[in-house]
Image 1 (cartoon, rainbow, N blue to C red):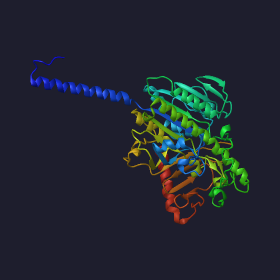
Image 2: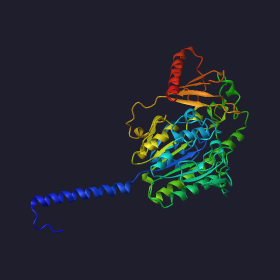
Image 3: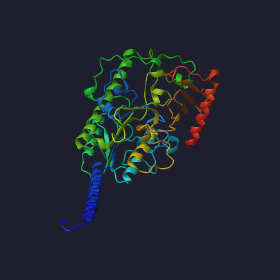
Image 4: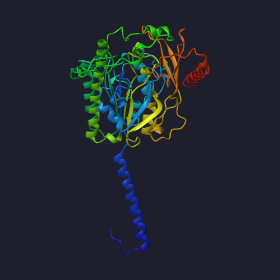
Length: 457
């Protein structure tokens, strides 16, 4: 385009317009290259909060899980609001407590009317996939919110499982963790223009533990130590607790305990390999830094603490979970978050990052303010609940936990309440409920509990 004959003012005007146009083009290119974030959430079953080397485990090595924390954030005080598979999974999906979303046990189906964060992402144009354990009341067919569905009924099987793929059920050859991983990686690599959301839920580490054959003997030489609380005095503990002494030194031999522990952690090895393959696929696609990656366990697990196995109870080993997130656009590598975070926080966090309006009535909170330290008035306590399921011995539980104290009561029974000073007694071995000097603490904790129940009703 010729500029001959133009005045100086006209030349300046055209130059300004061209610069503005180029600026807009640059902004469009930048926006196009960044795009909306992708989401990958990996959820494991019965994985303890300390079942990863990044948490200081003495012999378990999980370099791929650790990578998420090293390149993102480790939440040191992450908890579930109910320590049971189906209810907790519904909490992750909905951002609500179990008494609100209605999935109070493993036999209750999740209502199709409940909004979930993958469903809202799908509505916003995301390509969504659910791969793995759904579990709720044996639901196995496709659920709302997912374009791709790969799941199975109930607990499924570790070896040669029967899997439902988009409504068609068939038997698969191989090891469950590997099969689910292959489906996940294949789906990630498919050609697409829209952003994606992968919800990968493993069967592992649920018992009976079954490691992949390649890991079956990896810890044969390890001699694990019994936990400190495995030999605690039972004085002050409720009767239901005394009746649940399933893994106690003297009841089991040291070798029986060791075999149990070895199989548990050997099964975790398959999960870490799975995480590595998913991360490698994201790396190969060049989308890792534009993908919000979260990793968590659906509840904790006792391995002899308090002489117990399984979960359900309100003690720390049952309610604490591993929880990690990576997203370099918001999370500085190597971040450690000390604040208490919950499974119900995942839903509002993912929606917040996606720029999607968070539905009214959620009980969880977006974690975004914790990434840059701007959080104010963060939670100082939370409600824990569990609902009795026959034939299990654990009664209905209501509890409240703060940074220092935990108060536990059993509203449908005559069992005595429990109070623990977690800072002074981290293994929760001394019940302080009957000590006159702690009467004010008990009163305060009861008030907190009543408030939390009221706020989440």
